[in-house]
Length: 102
Image 1 (spheres, rainbow, N blue to C red):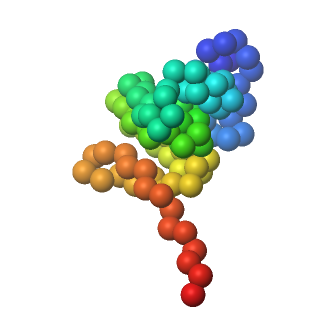
Image 2 (cartoon, rainbow, N blue to C red):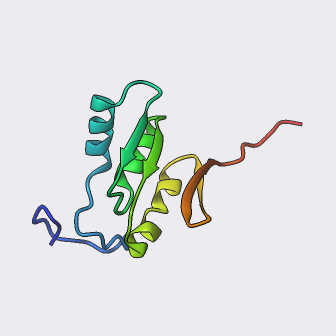
């Protein structure tokens, strides 16, 4: 079961015990973050807050100590226009290159 008691489906391979809905985290990010602000998530888990923040155009800083969860957080890149890389032990989101007209 999930942290809220719902049945867990691992069809998306997210085994984090307390995954939150993206829409909920978008609502919370909008509620407390000023326009152009930065969202800090000191317990990043599988990255739902990062997905919400980047989709809304906020900067995002995520901190996670569990290596398995950091790998799950790579889904942030899937949901946003960013590439996720690991540099010097840090997770870095960089904008995906855009196509240019010749």
